Image (tube, rainbow, N blue to C red):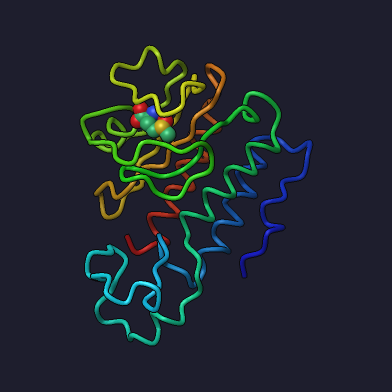
Length: 199
Ligand code: SME
């Protein structure tokens, strides 16, 4: 059962403890819920469902219409946002957390809608299927500057059977805002999402 209190991260905990809480909450949110985004037949009756990657043609129509209106990526973005806000600097300076390569659920300022595999930190993570830890975005060739305040960034690919299905992108308004603990925690979340959602 998803509850807003899940995003309450106690003050004074370490970043490693915060990521552990985030993963525990994410796992419990995703239990029995494999949608990576939300869709609702009654609102978009003519929408071609086969274009939605999470649509499974063998599911009963009734199951689709009664599924809860929530989405795993949206709740993951919310958890990340509240976790960073609860941590000391530099984590508290996180100014964007969300999903690409087509803009997905996120928290932060409005951002570019698509990023090709050939561009930016997100493109590099997707095309190499490896985490990109960028302490200074101005030194990253081809960095896509959606928010001019961003100084550092970490992007983790979400893999499904070896294929990159999305990337998890977190930006920080100070340089060197992320370290190995962030990489470990975000890669853990990416694994949970890759395994726990029908992309
Ligand atoms: N900086 C990213 C683009 C996404 S925004 O930062 C939200 C990149 O270079 O891929």
